[in-house]
Length: 292
Image (cartoon, rainbow, N blue to C red; front, side, top):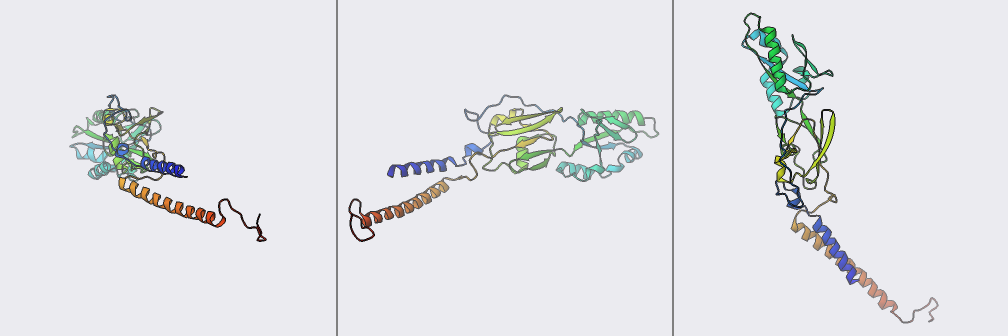
């Protein structure tokens, strides 16, 4: 009985200690070692390539007020739109002010008609529109050189498993840490060890797995996220509940020991009572009061 009790006690204490959420499991920017991987210096950032379904906010600037009014009638409040795009808060209203990349990869721009933009960057679209508009308008009386502002709106990424949701990308370059911060970080019981990044590019979907605890992540291909990325975070196995402070471990352990001692005392008292009443090897009385 004594050995079994000790074994159960040690197993329970080991379980409690193993359930502790340690800094090692949740801290970022840790030095790589045999448990935390290192990553090769593969950092790269590519300008976003336009896809079907994207929307572009386009504003034409010119010293000629007639030209500016003609092309910006649907986006007259440009400062408001830029403010909204900066905050990522353009959902629901951008249809009125933006140009959709249709199923053929075109946008329908006033006076220019269909302009093919699929596979281009926003900078390339800017230069293309400036060239097309300059060619079209240069013979107009009072013509003034035009410049074009092009921004991609409704860019977002998704998080599954932690603070699940869809979040706007409100800057040109967004890092994985900024994305996780927008989602409220990962919490104590979500794994940083095996974060999965689902990315669709050129019609091909890839799934990449990385350890966000490694300091080397800032030099790797996982550092920058892209629009439409899906970040999947799984719960740490066995952490449906957890203990994250030594004092809590001591308290739970002490309470468990006390309860165990209480139960053991009750059981042992019952056993002793039975032994005392019936004896261990003597005679027992039958139902008729005789002896066997």
